[in-house]
Image (cartoon, rainbow, N blue to C red; front, top):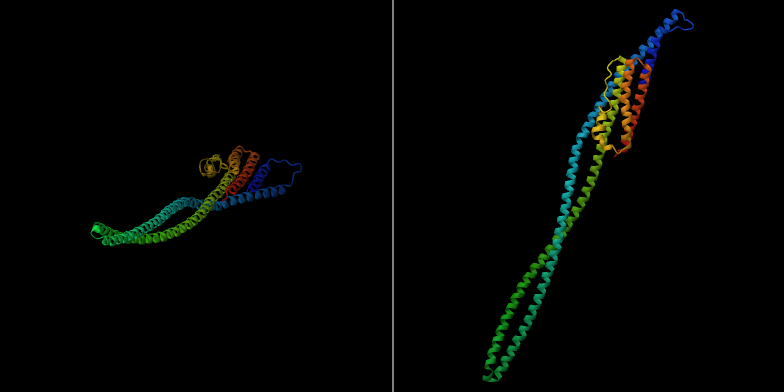
Length: 353
């Protein structure tokens, strides 16, 4: 674009200089007319090419708007990504709470098994003691019977002792009956305790199985969260990439407007500065502040400012009639524009997902 404009400016200067030229050797009038016509044709042709080029930039605006729309939609989806991340985080927290509850249940189940085992053990000791009591009462009963027999041998003198022996035998029988009843009751308790122990053991196995499933689910959930985070990072990067590609085209269109004004001889010198365009707003007051730690981001400010400044100075030079200064400022604008694009590309590389 700049080269075409340079050629057109050169032809303009050459054409404007023809009427005042006094060459050392005057060409024939017919020759001078042909030369003038040729230069004028080249100048007109150059202007036509410039205008076609500027009109063709309307396509760039369409592409820019499409990129901008796509980037806006992607940015809008970031809210959905945040919501997904929130649900993932909450789900993982609930899963961890479930694992914690299952650990508590497992711990209580272990204690229940211990208590049931102790109960069964105590019942066994009780039954052992009752068996000992039965054994002793049997011995006492036998002793009472023997005593009654001995008392009968001594006649009336052993009558009192016989009464005592009968009482002892009766009490021994009652003790035996109670011991049998207690043994029956403790047997039932032990039977129930064994059932409780079996159920508790089965429950413990079930709780352990559920916990293993919960742990595996938590691991899969963490893997899903990692993948979701990766996807989120990619989408956020693409959104930034779309935006920065949009601002590249913004500056192509902005420069095209400068060239159009120069071509049309537009006297309007008002142009926005580097803080007012889309890139400037992003850079100074928007999401761009997130990238202040990147070297490419910091390098972006100087050439971006120079693009806008050089474009304005080129318009001012044209207003003053200084085509030489105009060309210098346009060259500076193009150099700075290339540097802006290079820094944007470097920034995209440095923030790549």
